[in-house]
Image 1: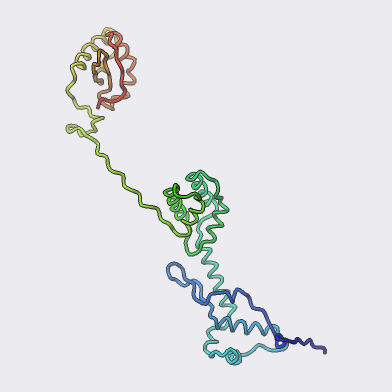
Image 2: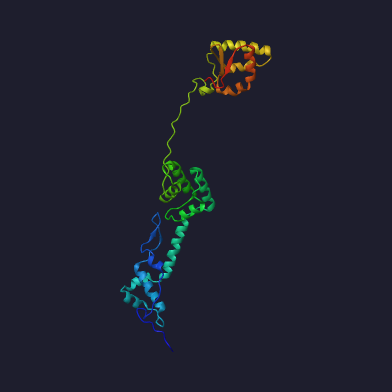
Length: 287
């Protein structure tokens, strides 16, 4: 029988080894909490894997035993025991690493679309699509991406919007580097002046107050005029009057009477015209 003989460095047999095995880190991979999520692949394990795979093109040559592997590679037998079954180890590690990355993003497309709309509302721009946002987030590892996490970064962007010319890049950086919003400053409390008698705000106080002579005189005249006109003149008890250069300035005596005075504007106008007194109705409470 004819036999194909290969000359050169491959004459004793040859095989191929996946590049991913050689690139796999030798150290264990851990998450942000220090938990090991993927075992590293020791250099000795890579050597054993390459050694075994080179026999795949060895023709009639059988695979080597443990002792020969250890002798040819110059390793101890107990080392070989811990590093055999390379493919199984590599596949398991790959699965763990893949699951790790998949678990980082807990946001669906609908939620990302809402984030896109909020971004547009804040910046007035449409330069960050849901698709682009998903792609950029997919490149980030080691951080658990949730809707609340993304909204927090939108707050950071809103606070610093006037400091960037590229809000889209700023937002991605905030997501990647976990920038936190600045604490909100507490607004100073405004003390509302209150009446010492009824303890209501001064603008809502209905306690009896000393009335000006102009108001007292107007009350008396307005009541008489209202009787003559056949209208209800009680609205004038809700009004203060000030005479300025012959013109009366009328205003609600408290904010709670504002609506009532507005509704009675027609009566006030009839009474004041009947009395032939020029006036201005100021619809701002006197207090």
